[in-house]
Amino acid sequence: MRPTTLLGLVALAIVDPQCARQSPGARAVPSGPSSVASVRAVDGPLRVEPLEGSTPPVFVLRGGPLGPQKLVFLHGMCGHGLGYAQSFQRTAAKWGTLIAPQADVPCGGGPWARWSKDVAALHRRITEAFRALGHTEPIRDVIVIGYSQGATRAEALAREYPDVYTRLVLMGGPYAAKPAGLEALRGAVAMAGERDRRDLMQASARSLAKAGVPATFLLIPEATHGSMGPHPEETMDEMLTWLSEHERPLEQ
Image (cartoon, rainbow, N blue to C red; front, top):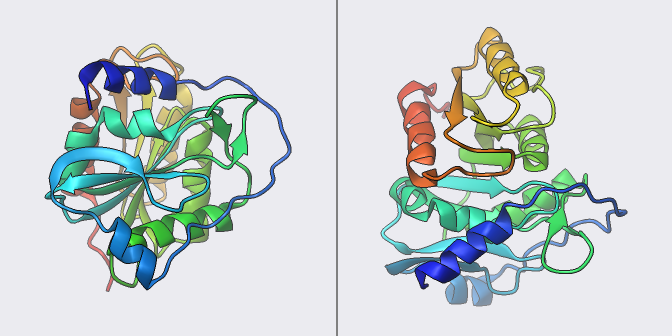
């Protein structure tokens, strides 16, 4: 993809206005032997593209080779997952397979959307996407990353499905995370833009660490709310490196 197109998509993604609609609920990604063969990740130039048959779309990183981890990125309110995933696709490929589901409630016209409260449907979309990309059962030990409203859904996934979402990254969340139900996390990182409100994410890191979770706070350099800053590859690599170096061992 040409650099101008990439920059346009990144700019498109970094939108987080307030919008209000009733949630129709999420729809699961189709799966099965016929669809798996057609959407399995293949070697080649890195690219982020919609998973075949996914509605709302689930954007997936393809090409590679890819690292061993499973990563999920959840965008913010009235945002778009594609540009966010593209903004750190080289770093993501270094660490593993990245998927970025699009939220399930449209925000007016255009491609933007917000998240409903149907966490179970979101979980199904995520796990079925990893299956479609060739990951074997059980789908577990996922790094879930959420920005703004997406941070609330990432926290909910980690609390509801602790065996699946074992590492949590909260970016610019609207409130401080509560540690109850998250004590078993292997690791957590709370992040906020250098030009954004920091106290909530700093409090999240402190409370999770107090509950026994390896946790830290990291700045997103030069970033306002919803932004990845000018160096998203380096920022996300710093975060993933910290998790790798400090996470607790995976329980078998």
